Length: 81
Length: 276
Image (tube, rainbow over the protein chains, first blue to last red):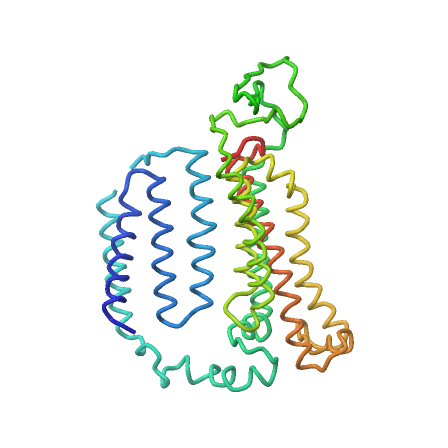
């Protein structure tokens, strides 16, 4: 595998992970988490675990983002801490 | 408090990174995981189960007992969500909002007023104001059948390609969620009601566990699908392949129903009246 692509994806994963826990707006955190799941899905696919990548794309990036957005919609958008 | 928490996190992260240096290199054939049972699966799974995708064979056949309880864990999550969020009393909202579609006028009907009957002219809308969006609704109506078809393909084709019950069930549930997001919660509940979702979730688990019980009644071990051969009219090796398909369908139904149940309860805060 081309190591430059892997390096770029790793960098984006770390940036998204730090962003998802540090951002104040919870809706942005949910979207960042979805993007993080997509990048993890690419990493699984690179490592040859296609079934895991498929699960990550459908569950992590698809359903859980929708459930997070629904939970934010029913609670509050600003985090307390 | 926050500083001490970050110190703990940093120390734990450093320990994890330090321990990861002890792992065998990626794809190392001499590592412990590659020497014990993996060669058996790689060499024999095609002869044992006639399933080309080794992951599916291991997930639903060799490790079928584990996967059954994974399904039950997901089902328990749906039940727990109902117990935590679903409000037991049916609280009727006092005021309702209706949109007169030909003119676009929004009507606010207070408590005691007469609500218009269901017709093509009047549409009930959520109290959080939503514009009438023909493009979004039509696009979703067109795209949902294709998503569902792809989900069925993923469930049925898990033997040969990546996929299976969990992924297909999640995609099937996502199609339902797309309806709920594009229209509203009530039109999604008209297509798949809460009771139907709960029934389907139970049915999926029963299909999986029942397959195992049928195998046990036919004289084999629990979840040993080769015992289904006389019922299905095929040889024992093909019967294992068909048995995997049966339990994958059960997993798909259960996962789809639980995802829909979770969304219904979370997006409406348990009232199941007005959603996202």
